Structure formats: C-alpha cells, structure tokens
Length: 215
Image 1 (cartoon, one colour):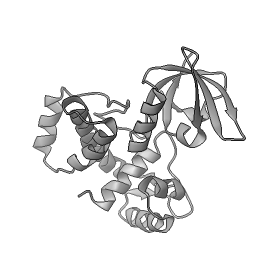
Image 2 (cartoon, one colour):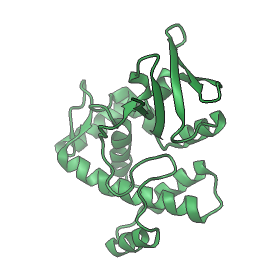
Image 3 (cartoon, helix red, strand yellow):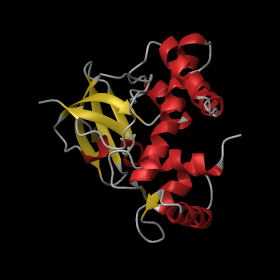
C-alpha cells in the first residue's frame, strides 16, 4: 500500500505543474481529504524539509522534495507505460493500477524495467517519463492562454478523471485547437478543433491541460 507521504508528494508534484505551488484547497480536492487533514500533513512535510509554504500560503516542493517526488514519478510513469503497452486495460485502470504497481524499492528492477521498455520518453498523456519536472518552459496551462490563440495539445494531468474526460471529448495529443472565447458567466473555455468541432472546457479542467502556443 502506498504511504501517505507518497500520495502527498505525487499530488503536490502534479497539482503544482507549471505553477508556483498548489493551494491547500486544491490539494485536498486532489487527495479527496479534508482541508484540515491536508494542512496537518503538509506541516509534517515542511518539518522534514520536503515542502515550502503551507498553512495560508501555496504549498510547493522544496529542492529535496522535488528530488524525492521525481523518483516516485519516474517509477510511476514507467509502470503506466508498461500497463498501457502490454496489458488490455482501460487507460483509467492503467493510471490506478500503475500507482499501486510502482510501490517497489529495487533499483535493479527499476533499471531492468526501464531498459525492457526501451527507456520511454513520454506517457500516453504526454508526461515526461525519464526526468519528470515540475516546470516545463515550453508549455502553458490552457487556462492562461488568451482568446484567439491557436494551441497544440501536448500534455494533460494523468488522473483517472482527466483520462476519462479526454476520452469522452475525443481529444488527442498534438491536436491543434483554437481558443475561441472564455465565457465568464459559466467559467468555460470554448475551443474549436481543426475540423470545426466546438468543445467546452471548464476553467477548473483547463488548469490541468498543458499546451504549446502555435507561433
């Protein structure tokens, strides 16, 4: 069973991607725990030197925390590639089972798994496998893109719900999308695909879709 610490480091890593941290509220939503529980545990991580901020400030991984989280995410993403390539599972199942499967400590197993898979670069949702990073200067959150821009969908948060969401919308990595407008009344982004299909994405979801702005 994964430790609480591993779950928190993963959530902070994924939730603060391309941002300067994650709020206590967002972190509690990702972990599906109460804000009070999140505050209490992030304070423990702070004492261990794994996170900065906390309480009333955004939580972010310290240098020590990033190094530990990167090792966790490297194993996790290798297992995601393994299950997606070699087993007949839905992508949502891949995400769930890979997290459980990646709870091993053997460096030999990690090396052999990496070599057997051909040292993969990306997961099926576009995330970096070999050197997971909290910041990628080539990408922007969809929620930060101004209307009128054309973007290329490069990556998205690899959570169970996001995988299902993308499947339902039939969105694909490397697909071009035009940001038509932002509806302030409903907090929705209206996007247009290459074949003129209109897609509406909530602001909350757009925070976890990562794009490259087409020049």
